[in-house]
Image (cartoon, rainbow, N blue to C red):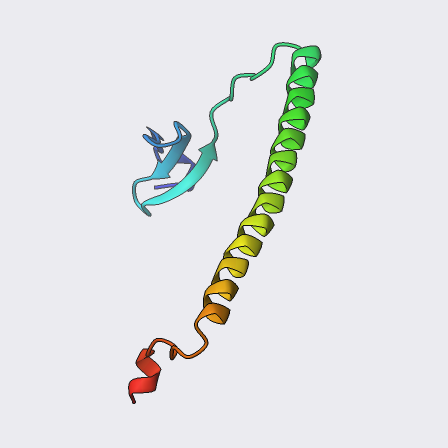
Length: 103
């Protein structure tokens, strides 16, 4: 049988909806065609507005993270001060036993 006379099977991929052409004799994919993706935006102005909105959301998230970082420093400082007060108020108490001290 000549090479051009082979009948290729056309199969649609269930995952990505791509069109595959498979040679039944060699069981190999001969050709692959991705499906056409629909446009997400109808015009350039709509896409531009979306991009501007994303920039504002990124800036807002960045400012929130800065504020959270500032607050975390205050919380850590307060915890340190409290533990330091506890340590200085009872200097005779021995530190808690750690697992590594038991060896």
